[in-house]
Image (cartoon, rainbow, N blue to C red; front, side, top):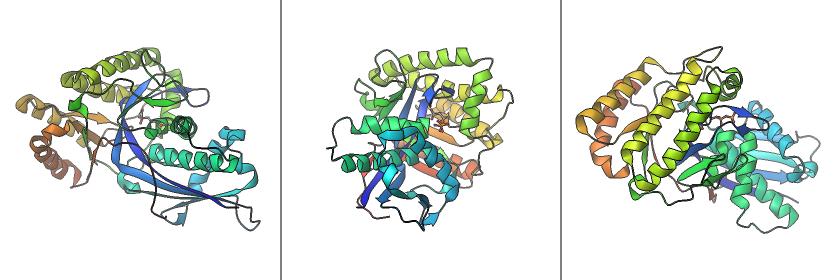
Length: 345
Ligand code: DP6
């Protein structure tokens, strides 16, 4: 018997950052992210009876076998244990492709692990003859987290939390959408991703997280993230755009400050990252328009602004793209979460 499942899952950009983990992929602090719309991974998993001439796990990216990705998937399957029982009797072929170029310097682990978790869970439900119920996306979030922490948040649309905090529906194991409705000013929020440098990361996120274990400022950083989480929940409910700018930029710079003060220390920002940050702050001061930045664990700049200001802010963004990024950027916005795929990979 062959079982097949296909899903598309989006990437997300954290506003309050997850940085530092313990135990089995548990976060040291709560985080809140914005789910994206355009940057997605599409995955198809085929579980079939073993064929002794084939490896029992095969991963294909854009149709090409990529054994380099397989150890991470193996690790996830080990962690799932009996929860994913299909693995005991079937071989897995995983076909994946991203809507954004691999060379863009945008991490595909969040969307990739989210799409994979959805496929594996759907196959397991079919195998056990279980209906898909309301807990499906929460369980997929927990499974995705075991593959990559930030992936736990890609299972839901809009603003999503992961971790513990007053008034949050998420916990350490599973992400969840924010409980209160988000103010209309933040609906459809834009994220223009300015590709400053597309080379491979010098230090992986996993290595970066582990540097928090011995970090001088770790405890204060975790407290700061908790406070920012509380503040951001209120900011998003109230439609407080100024508050959003303050928290988003402070979080981005705090994340990079942690990297710059770890032992050993490292710098992922490039000169053009800093130049763009300064341009955004100057433009905001001069124009009074609500545009701000955030950063991932890399040199690229995410320019965030409410959809209503698109006509006045986009020309400025395009100027930055030409001046600092040789025309390279990704245009994205708030998205609604994963969808079941209809296309065949
Ligand atoms: C800076 O989720 O990539 O993007 O759990 O080791 O896979 P692993 O790390 P990962 O870390 C993401 C860190 C971040 C902030 C965030 O997304 O919250």
